[in-house]
Each structure stands twice: as structure tokens, then as C-alpha cells.
Image 1 (spheres, rainbow, N blue to C red):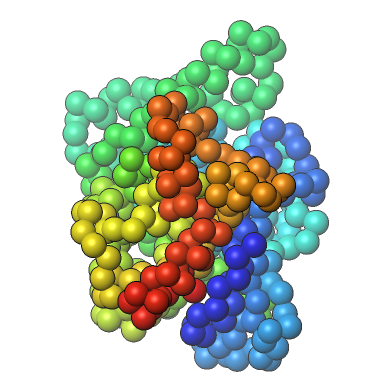
Image 2 (tube, rainbow, N blue to C red):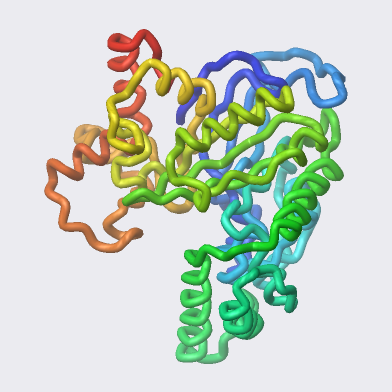
Length: 386
């Protein structure tokens, strides 16, 4: 568990993020009440939108929510069977009974207090639109093939209801192929990108219930740099403020510093606020918190100050593995092997030496990063991981 203290923002003073619920995971027929895969904690919310002020009960209130939900707008989720809409996801979070992509009905035992739908910025909404025959990409050579492949995709329900093992494998392989399509950089029509993002903002605003259920506008920045360096981007602002931008994606740049520049511009031009939440650093191959910049330059006070401003929290656990610690860096901790999703098993094989793996682990897991923050503070007089 990571608890990080940072200056009070419009909504929170303390975040403790553990992970995310993927609603589509309930498509296998398991009950949503049995064992949710992850949660996010928040303590002390105040000064909500509209200038209404809730009773300041800091630090005694604990709020439960999720800042990492994918819907049918995410290309990887859509290609692997998810058909959950934003409206369904919000209603599920508020305790309503909804029908999951696998055909089963599910509901939460306890409604959430807040949620952010964080669909991937890269080609957001494209797969669903292409499946409906919309011509949202400019490359006509790719268009026909993509539509053909997406229209023939099996649903999660089709796979769950397979009558034979061979049928199950065949349908599953179609999904694996389709998920690979998300790596394609589509040249999306700008008006389509605008329509999708406005829909994201409008749905968050429609489901916002002051004092009862808080919605955040956001998305996932899905960068890859010899490892996963994904981040969820959480905005604070009115619909007019959040609609004034379009998501900055890994198609623009994989460099987090460029992302932070985009975030700084949002703050300066709109007066709103925004933070970045790194996740699955356990799959970053040491790239998420390495002791140099994206370009290999030395760390500087300016770089560390920017990181401290825009990344005050980390998502430390989800179904792709735990990012708190690892046996290589906590050999005497019996629980260091908890939910270990190491990149060898999830991102191909690796011939890295043990020493290299240890170094990668030190730059990937939160427990060692907290120690590194103290070291950086003694050198630069600022701790980016406090």
C-alpha cells in the first residue's frame, strides 16, 4: 500500500491507489461480489464542482473508487470482447445491476464513491466505430480490411458459450489477432476524435452526483519504451475546460516529459488541474523510474520538480501484477512474491542477467522508489516520489 501526501487539490488530500477493476473481467460468469480484482482508495474529499463544499472530515473518511476502467472505446478491450458502454460502467459503479460482455449480470455489493473511465487515448473509439461501418480513418487501403476483421470478431459471450475446446481456441485466436491490431497507428479523422472525447466528458458530467458519486474525466496514456510506461491522466475542470483539449497520446510522444508539458499547458490555459498516475511499473523493465530522462540525460532539479507536481500517486496493484516490491529487492520479505507479474512472463522472454533484473526491479517497484526519492532529495533538495 502506498499513501502519498501532496498539497490539497479540488477533490483530494490523500490518495492511496491499489488498482483497478476491469468490468469486462466479469464476463467469465464470476460474480462481481466475490472478489473484485482491485480498488483505489481516496481519503478526504472537499470543495467539489460548483463550489459546493462538503464537510471537511479529513483525515477520517475513506472513499472507495476506481481510476482505471476500460470500456468498448478502448481498442484492446473492444477487440477482446468488451462491449460495455460508458453509461453501463458508471451505472455499475453506482451499484446498479448490469449485463457484462459475457452475458452474465453483475453488481457491486457496495457502490463506489468515485470513478474515472480511462480508455486508451490511442485510437479511442475507433474499433467500435469501424465495426459499425464508420469510415473514421483516412487510409482507405486499411479501411476495408479492418472493417472486415472487426465485424467478424466473436464476442466474449460467444467464447464463453463455446461448445468444444477447438471452437474455444479458434475464437480466442481471433481475439488475439484483433488485439494485435491496436498496435496500428490509425490516421483518425480529427472530427471523430473530437466527437469521442466530447462523449467521454459528457458522460462523466451526466453521472456526476455532488456529495454522492464523483466522476473524473480522464484517459490512459499507453507509452512503450522497451517496457510498459503507461499512465492514467486525471483531469480536474469544468466540461468547457476538459473539452478544450484532445488527449495527448503515445502517438504524439512516448516521452513522459512531453506529456507533462501538455499537462502544464492545460493548467496554464484553462486554470484547471491534472495529474498523471503511473501504473504497472512492474512491467516497465526499469523504465518507469529510471535514474535518467527518457533521452538518457542526467536528472535535473527542473525535471524532478515537474515529476513531483504531476505524478503525486501511483497505482500499485492490478490484475497484471503487483508493483510494490519483488523478491529480487526484498529477499527477506515472505510476501514480496505476492501477485508477481514479471515482464519475462507477460512481455516475451528475456535473457537479462540477474544483476540487470535486480537493477530493473529497483527502478520498477514502489518500495525501492520510495528509498530512491530520499536519495534524490539529499542530492537535489526535492523528492519526486514523496
